[in-house]
Length: 241
Image (cartoon, rainbow, N blue to C red; front, side):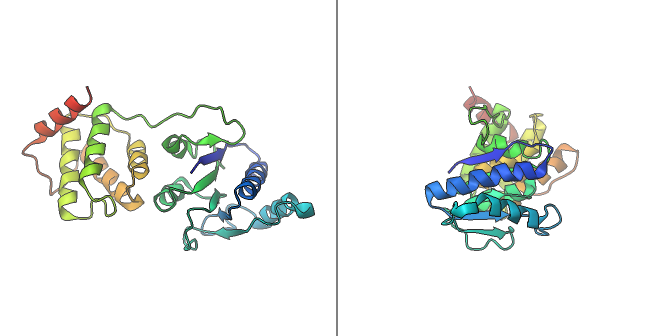
């Protein structure tokens, strides 16, 4: 399903109004329910009374009366339905990362409340700007050898458990050793985003990136196999040609 967003603007509630108008219209067109996600403290980011007032205006005179909607957080959204339209009202990039691992098939509409907040998420999905659908979205760009490494690792481990299994963890640590040994350039946010897009769970993608950061900063990681580092590198290098 599509991933869409509203570009940041200084007036928060103008942004919310644009998002909600679009979301109710789309939900009615597709006969889907709306799930509106807020942060777990709800009132800390948005005045929910104002948000509810905007919804009342949008539904005035019987408009969109058949659209069911509810307010949820990632903690309370238990009855996942791939047909729900999910609207992120006041959630962080970390929350979007977690959402993508449990609701990747859903139609998601994101609200950018801080300038640049969702750049990584937008690149992950090639998200569409609601107000400017023709705007070309940047994509995640990785070093070719790094991309080959991540694709191979993803194909060789159980992505449902990530690197929690001993053999999968050893493989991941070994691949990290290769990346460091051959000085492959990395961008940890883009790597995590790429892994999440390719069906890694949030916690496992985060764990991989933390190990990567530790090794790149000069730390040690135990449990890798350093005997065939050059063979791995040569294989990845040849697959990029």
